[in-house]
Image (tube, rainbow, N blue to C red; front, side, top):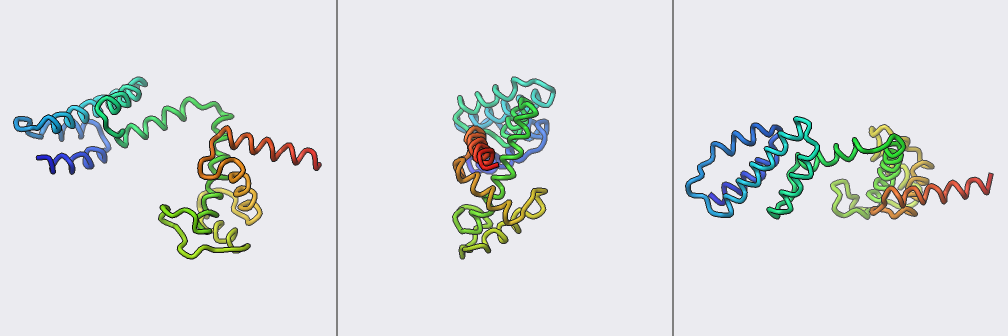
Length: 191
C-alpha cells in the first residue's frame, strides 16, 4: 500500500474539490495501514477539511492548514498555495496592487532578455545558443508577445536595466521601488 500512497499523494494534490478528496479517502481501506500511511491520511483529511472551511469563508483555515503542513512535515498542497496567494492579494491596497503589477511587467521583460541570453538554465524556453547585440531586445520582445504589455526594444532595454539594478532574479517590491525612485530622481535632475 506504500506505493499506492505515493501515487495517491499526487492524485490528492491535483483534486479540484475538497469533497471529492474526502470521498476518495473514505474509500481507502484503513485496517492494514502503517503509521506512515495513517500519518498521510490524517494530513489529507485535515487539508480537505480546512479547504472546505476556506471555501465557506473561514480565513483562519489557511494559516491552520499551513500549521498542519509544518507539524506533519509536509509541503503545502496546491490548493493551499493558491489560497495563500488569494489571501495576500485581498490584503493589498490599490497602490500596492499597481506597484506589483508594474513590477511584474518589468520582471517579465527582464526574464525574457535573460532567457534569450541563455542565462536561465532551468527555464523551459532556455535558448541553447545565446543571442547577442541588439538582436537580444527583438527576440526577447517576441517572448512577451500576448502578455498584454509593451514590448518595444527601448522598453525591453529600460525594463531590463531597471530590474537588474533592483536585484535581477531576486527583486523584491522594496528593491524595485528604490530603483524606480533612483531612476526618477535622475530624470528630474536632467529635466
